Length: 264
Image (tube, rainbow, N blue to C red):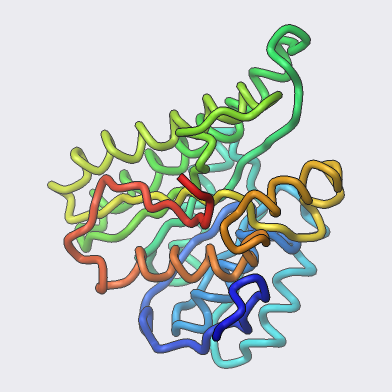
């Protein structure tokens, strides 16, 4: 019997994205973004990784180039709260790779503060990065797709908190619910451009950076609440993103796919 409480090893690539190019935001470090970059490379894509943290981004770029010498890897620093930087990201990524086929909007910011204690600044910053940043990137890449005329795919990173309540997460949950609504509405509009837009909604994917910014007690409790008794590995979320970016989901748009083992 398979023990689902033990994380499986990453699945080998199957060439799902051979010949494609992709842009991934918040891709530095050890989280879902960097795992997505690796998964898309495993599936044959060339990638541009982006993040606001220049040193971590450069390190990630060097690691990816060393691990995937036969693939094209580029990096563009971008703060998704800046329209100018987002527009430059799309322009520079298209120049580096020749075209863009896939956009993964992964940038987001969390925190744990009850509404009664939350400041305007805390609320605004989480919404500006997590929801407005996804909007800016979606708008920019749709403008690119409209001009290029070759269609493409957008995958957004939402969260199960867009559906479910959790203490101290009102700002993050509201932002992720907004990402879900943005996904659905923009997908209807993007269909005429030959573009599909979907989202993943992870419950909890544990990695060193998350452990650094959240309490171990909270993460242990959330992990234990999962049906498998563990958090997802970042690559498990990234694998779902890769499938949504591939032709295996050619009739899927405007949907939010839960990547979760939580009991109903």
